[in-house]
Image 1 (tube, helix red, strand yellow):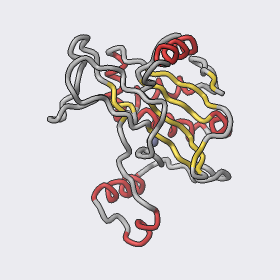
Image 2: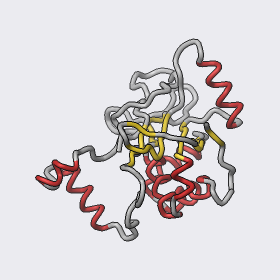
Image 3: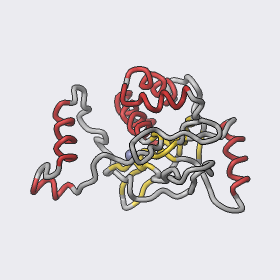
Image 4: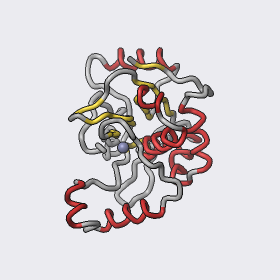
Length: 214
Ligand SMILES: [Zn+2]
């Protein structure tokens, strides 16, 4: 079951998100997309959520389904949210309820980092040819590695070294994200925007892939 968080409630991710857009320069690209009328939505997901024995904390998607049910999906989402979002961020409501303000902030930051703008092969941001709107894409995680590999060999690649250096520098790391729960995973729907030029069909699947798993 899903619920729509209020815009400014004490338990809403919205005030956190709005604050981070102003304070976290890493979200500058997203902030600029929002200025260009790219829309973000949050939904809280209640009930068990996870896979492979790991709890899913959140997910950032470019919402879409293919095929006959697409108009229905669009209508249901618009009816639920009041608009059709470019990025849909789902948060685990059960985890959220127990989480500290810092943990909530971290999760919102994490999911917002998945919301990026498509780039061309030269690294320049891409815009819709006709409307001029930024083309959304889901940014993957910076690091993917197994804990046992790192335990044996440490930061054996530059991305891992950067990652571990960042962890060592972090000024306000929480003691433990999930003191009592199972291992956690957050998922970015890795449905990348189409790289072909021309008008963009919204790129959508209702499924996430494993690529963005943590
Ligand atoms: Zn993620």
